[in-house]
Length: 135
Length: 236
Image 1: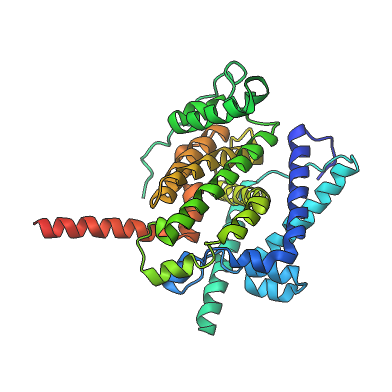
Image 2: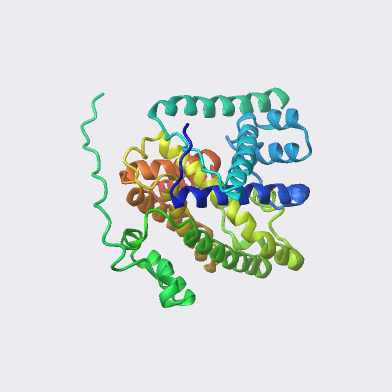
């Protein structure tokens, strides 16, 4: 990963990502109330089984409460995603604010496809297994 | 098993966007109101031409601002119908108790609507970014980014402008379904155009997360098929 002066799109995306990370942190105290307004998962309501995204909100609420263990238990991949989204966003915002060159992120190599697919499948299998185990 | 079906060719290169820019991206010249209305019209009547006229890179602000305006209008529309008709304003082919569970938190009341209008744009920004990340991830999984000249911004622009489908909520009962169908169509057209990929890959990237996370679509399709099959059986 090399540092270089990015095109305007990269700087805009970095600012946008950073703004979103700040927004997430600002909304964290209201997380419980916001989550209550979300519709329930249709798949879970109909079948009793979780969808791949089930636990994403609970993971976010647990992280907001400073409980990473509960966050990873709720949905490991979602918890990782939240940490990456907020941490990466704050780092990007800092680089933009300090007018530092943004790192050139690697592209999306095709070899990432299968590991990503397997990670998604493993995460969903964990959610279903936990649901069955806990009834 | 052999794959004899030739791949759908990628869409042709875009028309000269500078000659006839997408109205919303020309709003400094033609005005915000006219730019918005003409963009909504174009995305409804001629979406392929609309996506062909828009820029590919260098402007995250335009699709973001467009999506924020649409989200505010969407909140007003959906809460209007929710207040007037209640949860029955959303036709869903599922039993009533499941409907109540799904919509338990949806009716917000006046204070809730006001709050949603305040934080709605923030949530729209977050939803747009998260939704873009999910679709972009699935595009990667389905090999839809091989020839992409616009990268993440292409997905962001597509989802930002496709959010116009929320305005279909003006139709009571089935507005959400029209918005879903219109949104999928717009996203497929936009992703295929901005990533230079096939409509099939774009469709897979858009529909896969919906199928995985919203089985209601499957249920709806099953219900429709069941109704058709039932009607056909009774007509014999």
